[in-house]
Length: 71
Image (cartoon, rainbow, N blue to C red; front, side, top):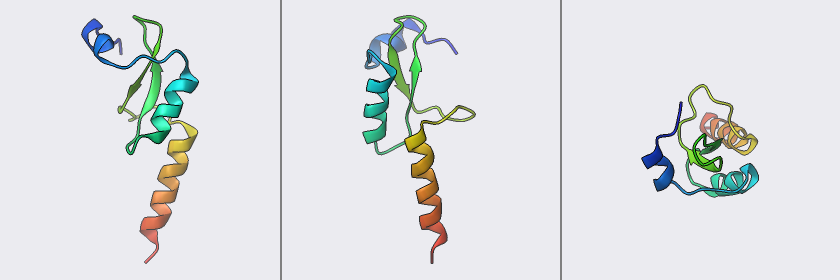
């Protein structure tokens, strides 16, 4: 999916994937970085369906699943 110019301008831009991952890791909800085709920078999105999740998010979801299973 291509990022529209208005969306690109309104989002925070990160110089590297690592910088975007640091911000995503501290968010209270799932975010993943993606490379923008317009500005060639990195943005964050909450769209994760069918996408590869960052390792910290996989671990967060596993821990939550275990927490919910325990009585």
